[in-house]
Amino acid sequence: MKGFLEIFFPFALIIVLLGFSFSKAPKTSHKPSDLSTQIPSFSEDEENLFEVTFIIVSVPDNTPENATIYMMGNFNNWLVGDETYRFERMEDGTYQLIVKMPPNTEILYKYNLGYYDFIEKDYSGNERENRKYKFEYNRDIVRDEIESW
Image (cartoon, rainbow, N blue to C red; front, side, top):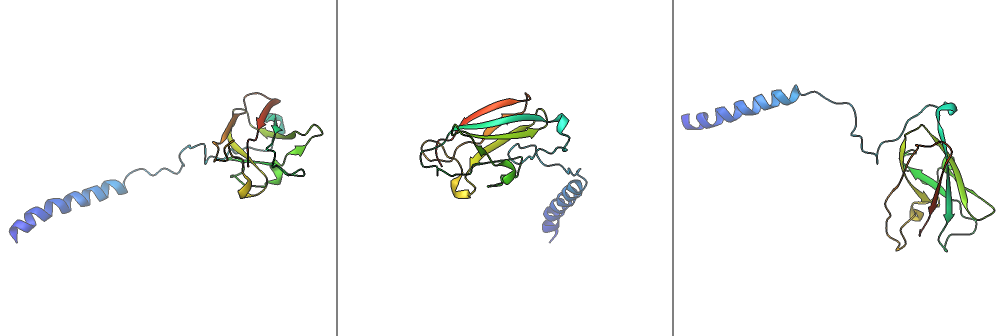
């Protein structure tokens, strides 16, 4: 029994001390600054926002004639079919959307047809990387092509 206590007591002491040190560790209340989950927050102060026009210059051949295209990203919690980010179809066949964000805001985004089954893909039909844009210039224009749905 004495041998058991000689082995058990040091391990028990170490466990108690480690538990005490972990309970005293500082707790952080912020999330990691991973851009894929970070949603930019800003006030509705229009004077301090940069305005950028996103133009979709081409869409896949299988896009319905009366399709409604939306933008989704870390700025709207990746919401598909968000009316706030709905493109307008222009007479020349392009789609345009004006987005306003604070200067230097970096967004990740993709395009969709309003359904999770119709989020843009690469030319081969595989999941595509998120697009990325940083609001560095006011009244900038971004031209994108959608390769497939």
